[in-house]
Image 1: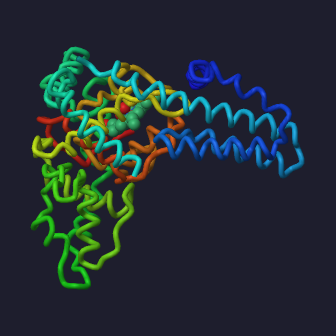
Image 2 (image 1 turned 30 degrees about the vertical axis):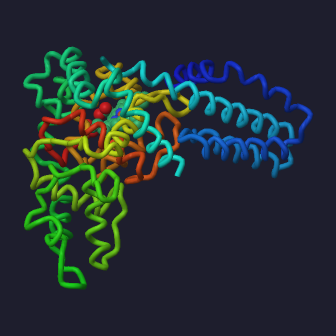
Image 3 (image 1 turned 180 degrees about the vertical axis):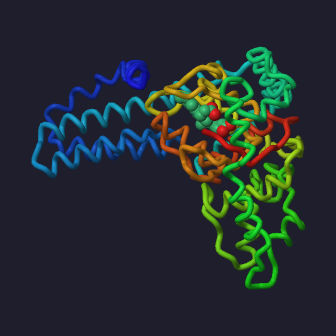
Length: 103
Length: 279
């Protein structure tokens, strides 16, 4: 059940996050920095933050510190996707919440 | 800051619109209540919604009622009574702010016009302590839960009667802010409070049946078996946010106070019956 919900939410939100797939040429450190900056930016602009994002950024940093560049890159990319999904949620929800109000 | 700007903007724009097309708080409240009446016609009388998930779960109710006979929050009430009666260093006590027995539950939450903000009982308790040179309490559990348990207990039977004064557009903006929060999807799991506690209330998430939001603010603080201790309403808000992987907001920060203002207004007419026991 838990996993079902999670993937549903992700499919719904990350549909268009392929924009970030272009991060391949960058180092893990650069991607981590980007994800961290993105997270802070969304936190500044909206009241939407996901607990997952910080956890994944931390995991990426840990992988990098452990010398695992490939794993760090993968996780940093994932964090970037989460940041983008959060941004989309905030945008979509600024209007969509009204649909749920009973009349 | 961001928030203030938004609220101000809402106050200005919102008002002109609301007269024409957008439903006001009173229409909201009636539609909200009707939603739950239609969804759970078996809950009779309607005041029984104060019992949370047990109002709709006859099977679990019997066990819960036997727990309430020897309530696990009794110790908290006793501890709260001591804190309430304790003399401060300056010779005063919480009684000087809240009267002999602290039965003031029905006064909260309310709109404080001078300060332009929603006042809650927990916030008022800490402000009383600080005004008298005492240390404030942590908001989610412990001494705060105990003293609010004592005050809630002495207030049992008082009726929720939250007002949104029409002479201050900021009050309506705070209400609208809480309303938007309630219906907005958040967190990685992409859920709104309303998705669970309204549109799928009575259904199961993992092993738990989701309670109707009508009645949510009546019974605080609670002794929760899962916590093995007492917790306040804002602790529970934070727990639900954490479950959907949204960063919780600060207990007694503006976000949660406005949310409390909204859900309390929605439950107007129900009786306060805290503290209570929960799973």
